[in-house]
Length: 272
Ligand code: DGL
Image 1: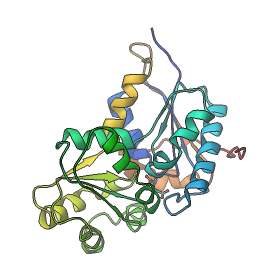
Image 2: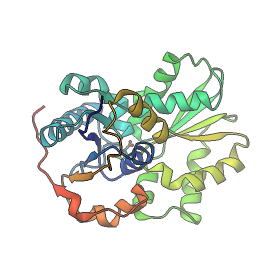
Image 3: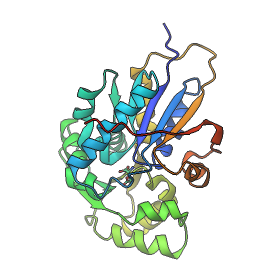
């Protein structure tokens, strides 16, 4: 049995292209439609209620535009607060990034490990990683540090050198004295992974860094009916504002050129 429909992916903006990248690497035959809500980014500083409303708008917009077979919520902030609401909004399976990231952290350590997450203010405030880890049997200590400056640094391309090092050092100083695993709980942080790993090695030797994107791609692979054998995936990108940003910012996040012929400006459906 096969299913040629696309996998839908959405995020607050360009950051979710890091998750799309992992998805395309893990499932090269699958077609994808990515929606970046570039008109309303960032979500990480907004209230949970606003993020839920925006997430439902995006899910409806994506499903109305393309007949997708699953919806991947690439945004950690949305995954932290809106998964239940999204599952009531669309009829296709919805996969977020928090549970795969939490599973990856446990696989890299143990149920008694000290696990810390770096994320947006919204993700940290939600407590979603700690809750999910506990539901998966984790009994160790958890910590969460909001790192809001890392999003603009990644978008500016300031991913190495003194400025990101100082900012990362400042955030890592808020971690507990001993940490076994640090989860990169935001779409943008993989761009800063080298700096984070290097500074963490100095600040908290022995800890490992986990990025949930690859684990999310595996979770998607487990639930979708695969594309027909030998299919070559086709990829579309929808944005709610400033399509040209996809050409300038997109490649660093996607790890590949962005085909601007496949980028479309859409109106977000505002129905709640
Ligand atoms: N995509 C968001 C996340 O992963 C980061 C950017 C934003 O704040 O919208 O939480």
